[in-house]
Length: 298
Image 1 (tube, helix red, strand yellow):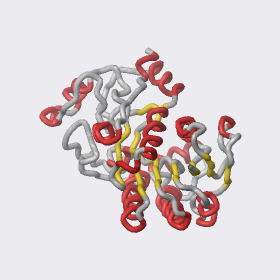
Image 2 (spheres, helix red, strand yellow):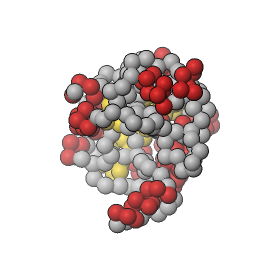
Image 3 (tube, helix red, strand yellow):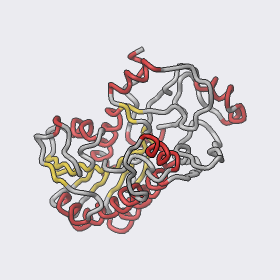
Image 4 (cartoon, helix red, strand yellow):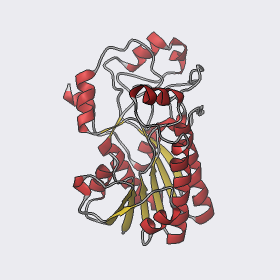
C-alpha cells in the first residue's frame, strides 16, 4: 500500500514511519527536508497551501497520514508579544488558519481526485478549548477527566483549526466515502522530553488549565497505524483523544482538584496520578493504551 506522510520534517513523522515499518511504500511531503533518519525515503518538497503540491504528493496513494500543521496560534496576542520581545521574525497573522484549515482542505480535495481510501490526521486536545486562552474567562470545566463529549469552548486560532479540521474530514467522509480519523494528542513527548520532565518536575503551586497532560510520541504513532489498519471495522469517521495515562506532576490528581478547584470535586473521577483527560473512547474502540511513562526516568 502506498502511504503519504505529510509534515515529514516534524517531530512526530519519524515515529509514525517507524510504526509503518517496511510493509508499505511510503512517500514523504514537507516544505523542508525530513530528518536524517528518513532521507532514504522518497520526499516531495511542497506546501500544503499549494493545491498543485498536494496533488503531486498524493498521486497514487491509498492512505494519507496527515501530520503537517502549524503547531500554535501565531496570531495569539501573548505569542506575538513574546516574539517581538525576543526579536524573532513575526509570521503572517493568518498562517495557522491558512495551513491547518485551507491546507487540509487542499489535501482532501487532492485525496478525492487521487482515489485515497483512508486519511488519519494528527489533531490536538486543544480542540477542546482549554489551552491557549485569550480572554480572562476561564475554561468552563464541567467534569474531570475531560473526554470527547465535554462541551468545547475554543478562543484561539490553533484550537479552532483543530476543531474545524475534525468536521472538515467528516464532511469528506459523508460526501465522498473516504474513511477519516483524527487523533487528539496532548504534549507529544519523545524519550528526551520525557527525561526532561523527570529532571525538572516541581511541586504544583497553582491550577493549570493545560491540565498537566502529555503523551509519548510512540503511543501517538501506534494509534495512527492502528486507525489505518482497523479502518474497515471502525466507524467511517471519528476523533479520539490520545493521552498518556498519567499527569506530568508528582501530586495525586484528585488532590490537585481538591486544592485548586474544589468546585469540581463532585464531578471528578480521578484517582492516583490519572490523566485529567481520558482516552477511554480510543481504548474501547481500537484498543489504544498508553505504554510509556515519564516516571520511569525518576
